[in-house]
Length: 297
Image (cartoon, rainbow, N blue to C red; front, side, top):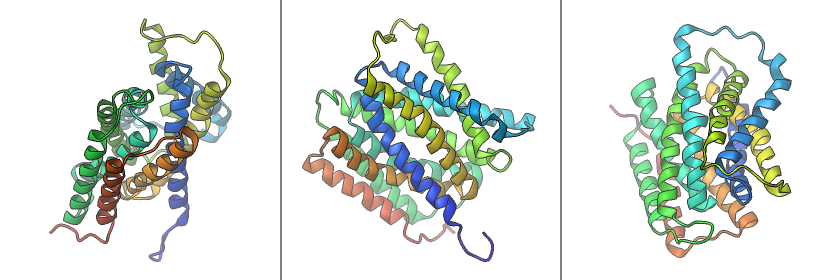
């Protein structure tokens, strides 16, 4: 937006995307109660791909550049392929609330990556704030208590961290591509590649094929494929196309807030005292990192 003003639309899209992504942790927990993780992820991708068949006309004619193919492949391999493998296992081992809290690390990873690969500036204050946030995330993981819904929080949170590493590669490649391709097209590529990729897991003997239809988990899979895979990714891709990668990724910090609230309301999840203090440490670090930082000399 010219004249020094800011457009409100990318910000609204990013906040809405964060609400949808936070809800995905809850939906995954519900879906995993009846179906194996790879079945859920494949079903999610399949629903998203089917929905895009109704949006083909809106995609229009796309002129692919040969030099962009590697970035498209990198984007799709990072997310959904690698990302969902780690996140699916993470959700099995930790609570939705703790997994959501680990996402607060993503802006740090993106900020560092954007500095190295995109030439965006990062301040010492931002780095210090993110370091505090990471300390809080580590403390949160160590203090996690085992339960039926979270048999190994430490490993689960580490796998969620690896998912954030994959999400970093996704965000950076997406930022590179967003100047030439529409958010809708890039989101469609993710869905179609994901549907094909995760279909191979159906052949694995470790994948338990569903023996019955369970309504609520099935609805959760449909919600993940339609509202989250299409809605959240499209809104996030649009926001990234309009804002610097490091600024857009800062909105990821809203996911822990929304996830903790939804985890309490829908799943009855709670934090112990040490986890509450660790969460406050995460948010303190995020607050410091976003306060008018001074650029590095």
